[in-house]
Amino acid sequence: MEPLELLECSPPLMREPLDAEQAAGVARVFKALGDPVRLRILSIVASRAGGEVCVCDITGAFELSQPTISHHLKVLKEVGLLTSERRASWVYYRLVPETLGELSALLDVPATV
Image (cartoon, rainbow, N blue to C red; front, side, top):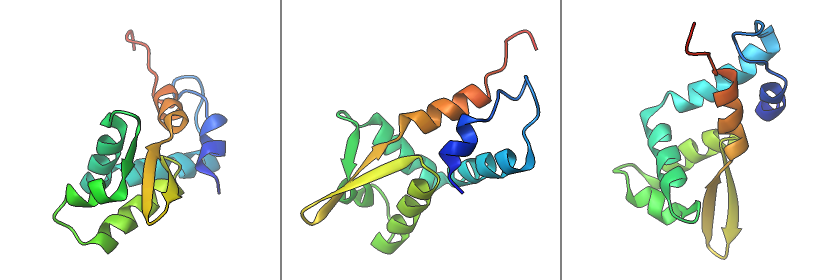
């Protein structure tokens, strides 16, 4: 199940209800964001000048083991929030802005509601 495909076809919540498959895909993304460590990781990557962060910089920002950080990064990649590229012995992570844009569009609610 590709979360991006589900999000792309998901209309804003105020226009029509999500079907079960759409809701399951969107829920996976929000579940990934519901963990404070993963939210911080996403924030670190998103706020970095140049738009990418070496895994060594992410790991150094936490008092967690490298395997734990790797697990959180894997979850964020699986739901389509991050992408990565290996360069020699380091892995660099980048935000997938389309995914956040799709979540934003899904939750777009007029101010007059």
